[in-house]
Image (cartoon, rainbow, N blue to C red; front, side):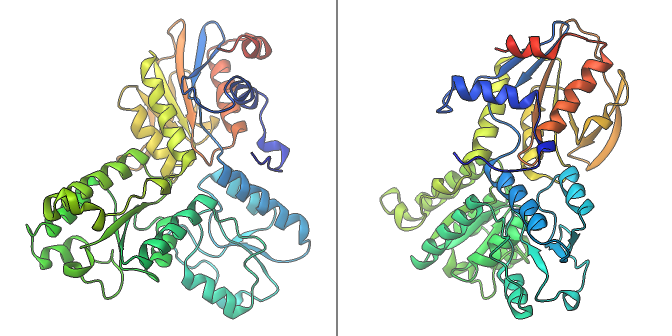
Amino acid sequence: MKTFVIPSFYRSPIISAVKNKRKLNDPRKKDFSPSLLDFGTVQFWFPRHFGFCYGVENAIEISYKAIAENPGKRIYLLSQIIHNPSVNEDLQSHGLDFIQDTLGNQLIPWSEIMAEDIIIIPAFGTSLEIEVKLNEIGVQTNAYNTTCPFVEKVWNRAVKLGKSDHTIIIHGKYNHEETRATFSHTRQNAPSLVIKDIMEAEKLSNFILGKVSLEQFNQDFEGKYSENFNPEKDLEKIGVVNQTTMLATETQEITDYLRQTMIDKYGKENVKDHIAETRDTLCYATNDNQSSTIGLFDIEADIALVVGGYNSSNTTHLVELLEQKFTTYFINDETKLHAKEEWSSFDIHRKVEEKVKVNLNNDPLRIIISSGASCPDVTVDRVIQRILELTENDFPIEEALRGMK
């Protein structure tokens, strides 16, 4: 596995030690049981996999490489490199500016971008339309393209599906940068449609089975399909790919549901002619993080904490999983832990950050901590240290790490 060169302030003495010990004991990543870091009166439980993934570390390495190699030049990010505020803020502190926001709204006019400027393409990738625009300006886009290899894998699979006359069904959030980029690529090779969840899969199924009208289909999916999309013809043969940060289990649920739809319509013996097997497009890191989170359900804990950017899709899905069993708080850093009795937490359902009452008086206090793929380990370190401070726990960190289970 590649080792990335990223600034030292992203590394952490606590979480790096936790991960290194698990790596030594389980090099093939077969054991999804959680880890326990015991401080006596406070116990921290961690999933087997959490935090920075390959694609994120790759993006960070390339971004700081661009800064180091281009002193005096104007350096731009197409949009947020990843969905983490501290990472983006640090890059901006080095003089980088965003050309667009996360919704694709223009912050800097294309007319101000020059051929000699340095442009960093984010980990989510970008649309073919923006690539054309940059090429017209004369900007070289290959040198600092941080598109995640697993996103590109989805694109490549979609090309093969298009060549075999499949329509591409993208499981994703329509306005997410990655989904916009994937949609842009897939629609060049095949009719394409974006669905966000199992409820939209059911609506799609109802049309395939002739239960709803073409008018209803157009109403349900307006603006979510490619130009000249013909539902009556283009939904006879499909393949499902995903936005890599979505719940892998939900992508598989949608695929299985649509496969059953094709069985119902065409018969089991013909199903392979109408829906492709696309399990290989699921991102292993997202899948591992989500499977590890589910592995926490076997333990008893007082609260769960998820650390990461509030606009991070993969982090939000970790919150969704944990809140099924635990009282779960979503924070972007340690500054949200104001006092022993009151924190600020982001509500993923109402999309607001609010102050919440917490109880840290149990002895031992059992806390689950996880973080999204775009959250630096050092941020989780600071969360741990803040909780120890709030609970007046002075148990030596080195001793806790030595006894880690």
